[in-house]
Length: 491
Image 1 (cartoon, rainbow, N blue to C red):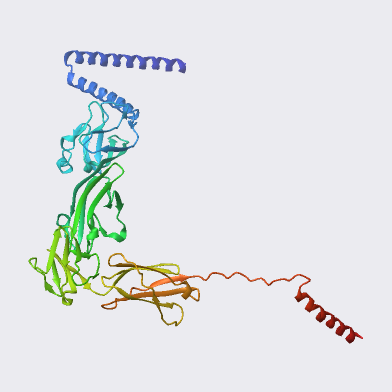
Image 2: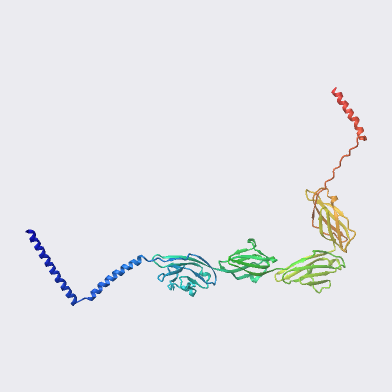
């Protein structure tokens, strides 16, 4: 009974709910048909679209591909004035990939656009730098030494990557200037400074040399002082005249330049003989030569007095740098000291010649124990005196007279003499000679050294007589007597 009552109540409750919900739906339909708010509907749809787009965008970010650079870092050696292309190949090559080129932390390009925040002119870039068409490579035209450096190609992305290229601009050496002090015209005693300015990349090294004959001889540390691109030779002499060379090299190429140096100084006078023999009425020719690159003025003097060209007592003949003085003595006073002097802008120099009547000796030669010499004397030679002594110990001079040759060639005597009989001991000897004619003695020759070795004497063997000789017979009794004495003693 109670169960029946509860079932009836539940059925009534359900019917009431159905009726209320039906009225509400009918009311909403009517309101929607009469006054629809389209703005609210659009806003609701937009919110749904944004939510959907946000969801899709997050998926793309999570699945984005990171670009990479395929090109490897490299070293570029480029000759000056050429064009170089620094490669930077990117994968994948899409329009969204942005490449940036920098050099030594200086930005050059972002994509294909120059970085105008930097003063490109100050880096000598100008229009020589560009991005190669349809690529991300950096193109540099007419490269200069200042373009050398490290170039970086990087990708601007969430995870940046980059590579570096090393560009070296090379250039063969060029000699810009090679000069010498005073254009290579120097005076003895001054300093020679050579300057050789060079360019090239890498910076060239310099080697200095000097022409000697047909060979260029490299100058060493003790030949000059070196500082940078200069060479200095102090207190130059005539021997420093010649061609000098600057040789530049850097591994790319070589170059060479030449400068000629002339060192001028006081003239140098040379005479053939310092002593000349003559006689009254015999002509003597005194010869003088001047060594100098430029012409010098030559003068002659007699005992300090200038000899004029117009003098009748003397005759002067000159040919370029040579001058001869002809003298014909008339009296003893015409003999004496004659001087040849040469002068140029740097100074003067002279040498003297003695004109004498005494013998003049020359060419003392030694060959083992033999000596030879030449005697000049227009007067007859009377005595040839030779002095000899051992070099070792306190030996005294020994005086020897050498025979005077009977024959002579005009006014010359040729003497050849062997001292073997006078060399009692082996070893070293010193020898000198002087000669007298009917006027006076000559001066001693300069000492010459004789090295002499004694010859071994042959051994004298004792004579052996035959058994039947007298010597043999005489020795027999002596032998018998000796034997008998021996026997008596034993008994």
